[in-house]
Length: 592
Image (cartoon, rainbow, N blue to C red; front, top):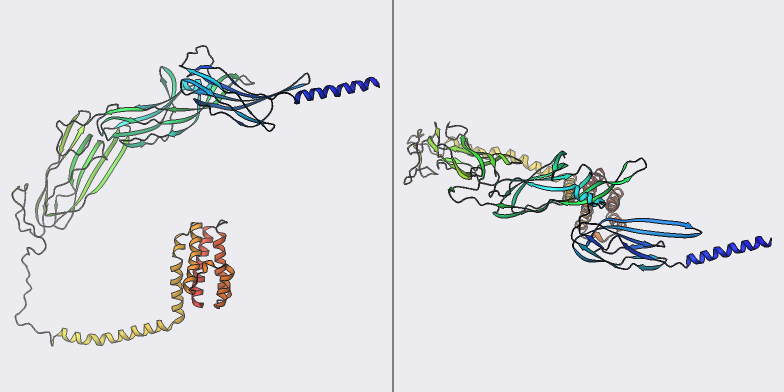
């Protein structure tokens, strides 16, 4: 018995010593770096380790570095010879952003109510280093396997010449792109731009820097430079989610993939825009650049006066179709011409805009004769030949077959510079009457004529109409109840007009409805009812001998207006409340 007692006492004493030793263990919180010196193309691992569990971990700002991964957390706990060991670690993977010496500042954590801080450590970032035998990290693989490129069709275009920019993402077959999103879309300052939508991402097998890659077109845009000189095309930046294969294997021997995000940018691109040559530049040049055809046509060439025809000036081809003016027709003043109607059918492809634009004039001749539509010219710059071209339309003769004569000779040729056609306007010139409608010299006088007697009988005929009109007015005036109903309905529409416009928008509708109800009582009773409670308003209506159904309907509407602030109301409920409000206002107007 004594031996057993001694063994028990010894065991309790040993456990007490262990417990005391564990409680007395010093708390540690340390920062460990994977290396003190690294190249700018390398990665730095930072571990914050503690031997007691803590809360409220606050990492440093990592100035001079970009956080690639982290914080990842790991916990280790074990018993060895009756002694418990505990370790908790927060891990970050950093990428340097510049060369130089940087300090990883203190991190803090709270352990058992006490705040502990790690010691700061200094890191030197050198120039890029070669690591042919070193193990590549996930980010190293991502940097080598993912590229965003902006492919530009021309780096030295002319002013207003089309430039196509295609953004392609190149990815190595060894990685998987799971998602991407645009971080910053470029702003094409000093360019007229038109996006070509990408409706389907078509993956192509291709090469990049002599290696096998997969590529996909993400964005296409056509630019027309509006300024000469060196212009900058801003970069497109993407955040891409990736799966990178690692050297680790799972239980079945399959390769384990690591997920990471990488920001890629197409980089700034610059183009040098050449001005259009001044040599040989036509006087009527309006900025058209491309390859075009030009025509002037009319819907008819033979017609009668007061009939109309359509004169169409059309330009079709490839180029900056939306960025220049169409030449105007110069028509004789004897032709009435309306403002032209502009039409366009233009589509944008990778080679630029193509299609046609036109102005259609409605022309109405006034007089009989022949009227020429003079030839007009259209000039444009062709960037392929690097020369200006001028296209001219032929003269079109309009033959007006029937109609009044203008009193001037028909014009079959161009109008002379020192002569003008005389055109009748207003009453300046009057045509001779073919039918003069002459009357005999001995005209009858008004007195005694048929017209004289008709004018005398007119009052007699108007007397029955006046009597009927008077009786109708008396009937309307005597219908007191009907007049009240009309006035009440008119008043309801007046006060509920704002609420009716807001039907479908719960908050706006009930605010307007509540305001309409208060404004009605304010106008009717000459008091400010918005300061009254619903009970006070009910009492006030009772004093005015308003029937109970109308009182309850009015107060119920005010309750609905209040409940709408906190409860959902359907469109059907709003329409019912609007109809109820119209009915209640009409009933009140009859009783007050």
